Image: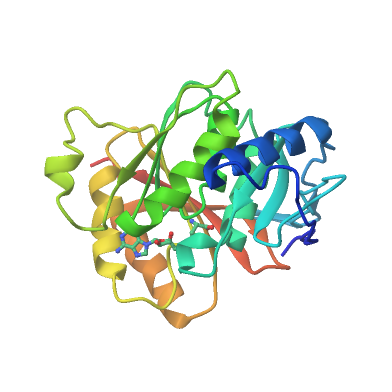
Length: 266
Ligand SMILES: C[S@@+](CC[C@H](N)C(=O)[O-])C[C@H]1O[C@@H](n2cnc3c(N)ncnc32)[C@H](O)[C@@H]1O
């Protein structure tokens, strides 16, 4: 995990404002004070063959930070502030998200997402969708209904003043109502992205069906995951039966692997 700059500042300036306005004003002041952020590229570690091996770099560089429940990151020269909570798994940033953001930022020629249509499943706090949006993609970020408010908040606060394609936030429950809510004829995506969606939960079959449904010919799946359990490897095997899967990168310090999947051509 990268370092997290967690410090608390007692704010007295805007206490009379409604809470939402207060958050936005504080946010804007923070961004003004910290408008420059260091750009540091991921550096691959030496590897003889196979996927490139990366070290996840500390990506936050704020000069000041406040509120213990906010995290600050820097990707593609932009400060990104993520509101986290302890309420659900989708309310914190997971290591797979950091790995994929770093990879997208550092490999823009290899994985060119500018003006491409991207759908993220299990988007959580929205960090990957925000970075994809900053890098020029048309982004649809999806998750369970109870995650969407914070997801929308994070995506909006981090993209609203930028010249980017406006990201969309939508409910997508794995395996449910896919053909009604995401009909294939009108919903073709260039990339499906997913980070740390595989762990010890009971929805692995619906997740696999969802990935299979969303990946049409021409779609590229980018899946970054921390590998912990035997079920993670079983999922990888199952995925390999429905898509052509290759490993793009490895992040040994966090045990994250990044895979690319494409539809098999018959
Ligand atoms: C471990 S979190 C990862 C969040 C984010 N991708 C990241 O890497 O920071 C898993 C995400 O999958 C979502 N999720 C879990 N089960 C789901 C389901 N059945 N349908 C849709 N999303 C689900 C959770 O709400 C959560 O946002």
